[in-house]
Length: 184
Image (cartoon, rainbow, N blue to C red):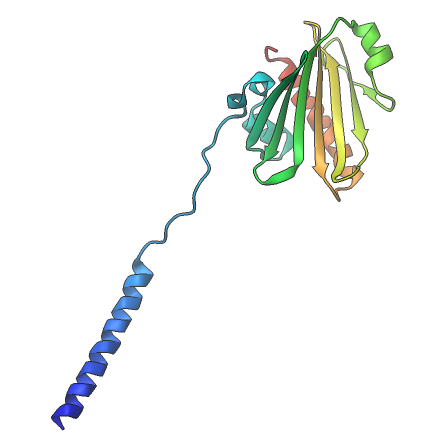
């Protein structure tokens, strides 16, 4: 009988310990997921200094968190995306030019581009169709008062309707006006 009591006591003790272990494991805080540091777009250098994630999100309504700058010949470019997603994206390019407003309007506005008032010396906006792995897009181009040709382009993810680009166009013009007010 004593042996039986000991076995029963040992079994109860094991059950109690197992229960305590489960509680202890449940109470142990899990390791938090790694958090990517928030680095401003300007940290990429170049013309990325003209872009601000908070401003973009406020005007366009999309959160971006990765930027990269590049210079090829006399053109400075900045690409902005969301980490882990190739689209949507924003591309900003700035090139020094000798074109004046007349040349810009006659030669640099792409076919299908609509004039935009209140942006630089001359400006246009254009809805671009989807193609390849990219959805539709909106492009705003303008000639600054200090002889720079700037193009701001937003490209949607594949599968987005053209109506999304139509709705975004006025917002991208507003973002362009904000960029135009900064020093290039």
